Image (cartoon, rainbow, N blue to C red; front, side, top):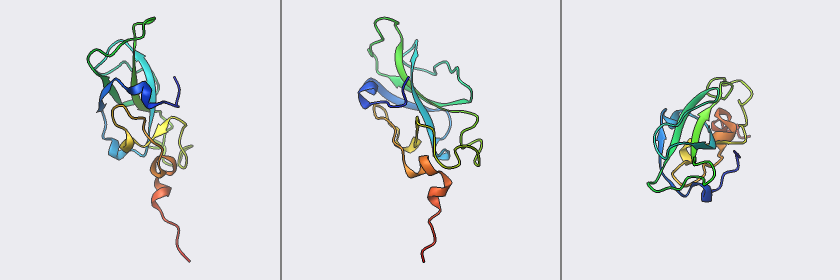
Length: 128
């Protein structure tokens, strides 16, 4: 699982399902997980919480060796900014973090001022 996803890895995605309102979050972590199904809520086995996931098109191929499907999951860990606004990610974000507003099926999410600097990005420095 790499935080450096490419659009070509997501070509079978047809839908992103949000379990929480992404507008309320500065960033989400994205990962490409191997799961047993093309659609529906995948099993989540990390600390923290599942925020969303992708569904794949009918006929999307599984890995020939494992029989598993590569699907994106979006999640947050207990020490992420939404739970600890003054914690380790008060400014900055983990490598796999992207702005949820930039996520769409088949497209890797992007890093933005909001995802990388959080609330400090919204505070413009006073001009002299």
